[in-house]
Structures are given as C-alpha cells and as structure tokens.
Image (tube, rainbow, N blue to C red; front, side, top):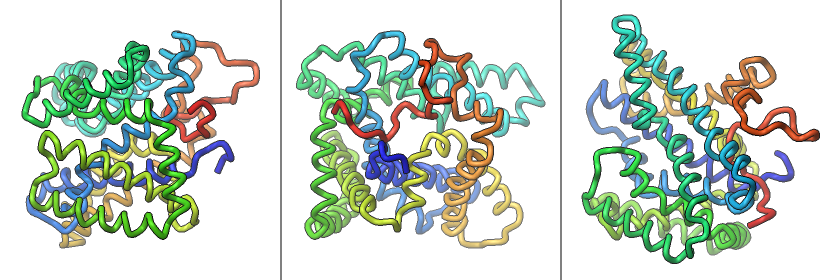
Length: 353
C-alpha cells in the first residue's frame, strides 16, 4: 500500500462496496426467483448506513481542492466522473440490453439518452458525485451550520414522503447531507477513526451494542422514518469507520482494503459478472439455495472486476478505469504521474484536513 494512503478509509470503502454489490446481487436474483433468503437479512441490516457512509467518505478529502482553480476543479471533480459515467453507461446497456439493441437500436439509443438525464440504476452514485461536487463548490462560502440545517431538512422531507419523481433531486435530498458532513467535518471523522482504532477494548463492545440496536431498528421497521433514518445513518457510518480503523491495524482484512482502494473499478464493472453468474445459476440449477447463490454471486461480482483491472491496467484498455489526457481540461504537470487515479476520492493522507 502506498504510504500516502489512509488505510482505514480503504477498509471502510471496501466494506461499503461489498455491501453495495451484495444488495444488487440479492435484489437482481430475487427478481428471477422471488422469495426471502438469509442474505436478505444482511442487506436489510446494512440499509440504514450503506450509502450514507459511502458518500461521507467521498467528501473527506474535498477541502484540499475546493478552493483551487475552477478549471482544475471542474476537470477533476466533474468531468472526471462524467467521463466514467457516460462510458460505462454505454458499456452496461450494451451488455444488459443487447436484445433491445438488436431488435430496436433507436429504443436502445433512447435508453442511453435518458440515462444522461436520470441516472441509470447502479450508476447513480457516480452521477451524483459530480452533482455533489458542483453544489459544494457553489455554496462553499455559506456557513456550515446553515448548509447542514438545510441538508438535514431536505433529508427529513424526503423520508417524510416528499419526492419529485426525478431521481437526481430525490437522491440529492436523501444523500447530500452525508457528503457535506464528510467534507465539512473531516477533521472530526479522522480524529474519531484514530481514537476508535487505538482503543479496541472500548470500540468492539460499542460496535456489538450498535449492531444489536441497528438490527432491532431494522427488524421492526423503525429505521426509515424522518428522524430515525438520520440518526441510524450517522451511527452506522460511524460503525463502518470504526470497523475500518480496527481492520487497518491487522492484516486479516487485506482483500477488503484492496477492494476499497479500487472501489470505483468494482462499482463500474460489477453488473456484468453479476448478470453472468445469475444467468448461470438460474439456467443450470447447480445450487438450490438462493441465499448461497447470491453470496457466491457477490464474491464473483467483486473479484472479477479487480482481476480484470489487474491484467489490463498497463494495456491500452486502461482507459476503462483511467481517464485519458484527451478527456481532460488541463494539461499534465511535468512531474505528474503517468496516469491519474481512477477516482477523485482517493484515500490519501489528509494534508489539508
């Protein structure tokens, strides 16, 4: 691992990306074979904090660049994500809707066009990151307390049932608060992670207690109301951060750290191996237990993109995960690395937070 990376951030992102893939693996296969499985329970348990923590971590390092030159900011925080979104939107629709492309190319093209207006299924996180970066740059001079109050109010309205029907607005209402807190409260988050990692004797019992509380709240459907959703999201995000801090002091979670360090690779690519695995298990019937099928699919969908990336990262296919200079607004610096990292929310040491 690069000495400039923050290990607990990679571990936390690894936990999040695995949970995200698991959720899609479960819901996608459940559409083929309806029913409740043991893995549904894990997905439900993670519901309150899975995406809030992902967005909170995404905002952690923003303070280092938010006041930089506008062109650089737009290039690295907006164009960067839109490049990957558009490219992988086309790639995913090619594989997932190949039958539509063959039967009616115009309809397939309309699906691509609509994906530019309304984020496509699994790709919405990348789309919304670009939106969040734009908004945060525009309001960076507004007092933190005012933005926090406004974002919390939007989140409360959303969970009270107010929706516009356009997922960009609805997801902004639901998720922007966590991204902003990651940005505005980064020093607090880093201090919390440091304390949690150093005091395992206290952290572990607290995590166990949180786990029971989170399970009971989900079990009785008390986790998604206007107020409890906010509290459960921050508690769960704190639990993931603390778990990442604990794991960073061992070697037992190295695969999780690696997945987190390359989370954008997994996020952009997992749908294709997931669909392949689902098709295989559904057609062959080689395994009868749906929960086991979903678990195997989760592992396969996480590992396959990482293996693929490992073998193509030094080839011409690297444009799939590293934005070429052709699609950049700024020229590379003389001593700049050969290629930029595939995501702008790198887990780098917080030299400005």
